[in-house]
Length: 388
Length: 108
Ligand SMILES: Cc1cc2nc3c(=O)[nH]c(=O)nc-3n(C[C@H](O)[C@H](O)[C@H](O)COP(=O)(O)OP(=O)(O)OC[C@H]3O[C@@H](n4cnc5c(N)ncnc54)[C@H](O)[C@@H]3O)c2cc1C
Image (cartoon, rainbow over all chains, first blue to last red; front, side):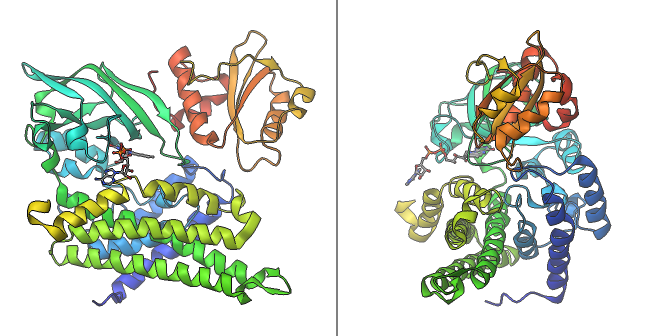
């Protein structure tokens, strides 16, 4: 495996690195340590800049007007884009644009006009409503939200938990049980306008994350036109699996970016802080922590790039993407933890970004499928056959 | 809305009352004499003495009462309080109108 960057990739990475250092980090100095957004004027100015750079909407596939960037380059950029205080959940505060929910690319033309294209232009936002109080690891079996057909409409009743951004979303992708099948063949995906009567955002669910809070939803006699079914009836889980696995790769890469900055900070601190008559960097215990950090970062980077390159070559990469997500989220958590230890007291404070990364990285081991579920995905493929 | 609203009783907004607060991170509401909430704010990581520093600034705001909640999750709690206020009263407090772009819709 050759993980050296091409000249073009080096140029792109360097450009993003400079953007983070020159544009994002200085603005964060004036924001609250838990801030989740730039001032609107700064945001607009930086969006103009990324558009000028030709980097805006970089996740949008070529056939939908995006730059058609490959997964490997996207992963390399994601490693750079998260290298600031708010970077894990707000890489560059969204100034590179977004691509919307992966499933929308499988929508009908009419649905694309109404939901996908406005999302790509930044005019609408959507949220993804899968998890329920009954469990998110195995949603196919856990989903209890029920959809009953009534003429040209479906009536949804039920609730969802931990749904990010639902309070601000214009539409939600809601998964509901629409047949008596107790598993994945009984679930349908609906695109639901959030201003429909019966769609309620009941509360904010407070978590370790400073921004993009989760919410609890309730659906009461919520009517959805049958034309808003995404994909096929009772096949809600079959939509966009490939695109979703692809998304797991930049998700993992974002964790690495945070670990890289934490490691830089730990090295700098160890080389300047004195204790017991010498620098921390001279103490073997500290050296080992820094070495262990490096191993975690390189291990995760190797796996992320491996998964990305397989995806770009058109090979199967489901196991590799799950492995990358698992190792990057767990490894980055350890790196930040060690960096905090090396910093001592100041590592625990809001004067440094480490405490925010520590909290937010913890979520990464559960969000988008817990580590155990990633192992399950890998085990199914490795063991195969009757062990699926 | 008990769990969502900051529904403990208001106390007089005075330098003495503020000085007695712990210097912690958190959220607060300040109100006029009629009990109308005029500002929902937070004491974030930049405040040298947390709620004390943030509430001291409110002494010039014309508000006469306040209530507070200590929380490390001040940012998400602040958003929640703003949305709950809009859900209950139909609009943001007078001194929060500039925050309209930050919040979504809650129907508790
Ligand atoms: C901040 C935040 C934001 C979120 N945003 C969204 C969102 O926008 N949309 C959405 O739909 N969901 C969202 N989620 C939900 C998230 O995807 C789920 O929390 C996650 O899938 C786990 O589901 P659960 O919490 O119900 O845990 P459960 O399914 O109850 O599992 C609990 C634990 O059991 C273990 N476990 C589960 N299965 C196995 C197994 N087979 N073998 C061994 N151990 C196992 C794991 O350790 C797991 O963490 C969010 C969650 C958080 C915390």
